[in-house]
Image 1 (cartoon, rainbow, N blue to C red):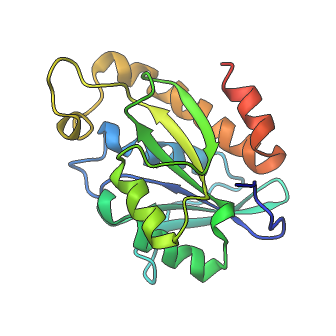
Image 2: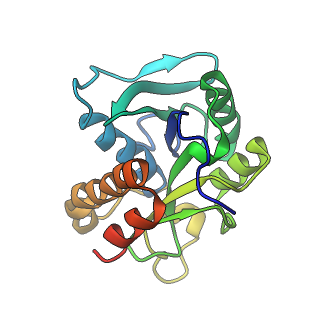
Length: 200
């Protein structure tokens, strides 16, 4: 596996989650929260995400430095994320190695942020759908730790629950760290971004 090899292509940053107000504040939607944080950093800041009908996503075209970036949130449910991502990448002619998928991660402690390229899906349905649709696992991931459920709680139920009050208090800082990492990945590459973010 190699890092991105198409320097003139835009980056596509996709926040995974489920649609609708019922799921808005749940652990499974932290990827969308990070993309919202990135959108707030753009200058001039777009007033809102626009619906991109051909891909069934909400998307913004922006720039980070000299690099064009598409920020997107699929309007499908998590386990169907791949179709919208593939369609949007196809529309903007973005190769898989310029896609960054932002998602919740049960196998990381709450608040931990990790960046990687390629690898398995760890049972994550959004990643499974993405890899299948793209025909490759070779895309970037920004993994946001939500921790394992307490006791015998079903992980599928756990990720569809809102963050606890104490977790919610830290959520802004966690999303900011993840957004920092994604910006560094785009501007300086994966190794540099990992060195900066993984030590926090």
